[in-house]
Length: 69
Image (tube, rainbow, N blue to C red; front, side, top):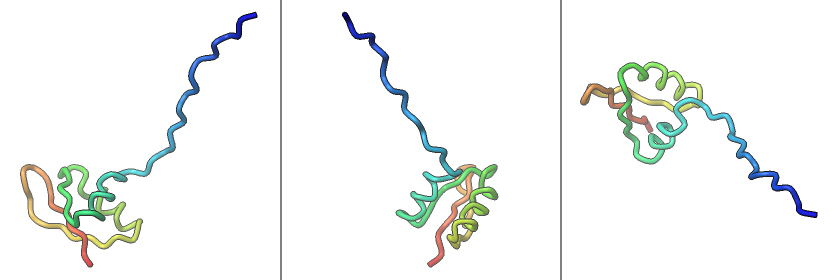
C-alpha cells in the first residue's frame, strides 16, 4: 500500500516582543531612526528592557534615538 502524504510540518513562530529589530540595531550601531508616531512607545520599551537612551533631533520625518553609555 502507498503511504499517505501528510504534508509539510507547519512552522511554529515564536511570539516576538515589540521593537525587537530596532533594539538589536540600537545595540549594534548606537543610533536608530524611529518614526515620530512610534518614538514614545520605543523609548518606553527600551526603558522596560533596561536600556538608557536619549532623543536627538528630527530627521526626515523621524526622530534620532541614541544609546547612552
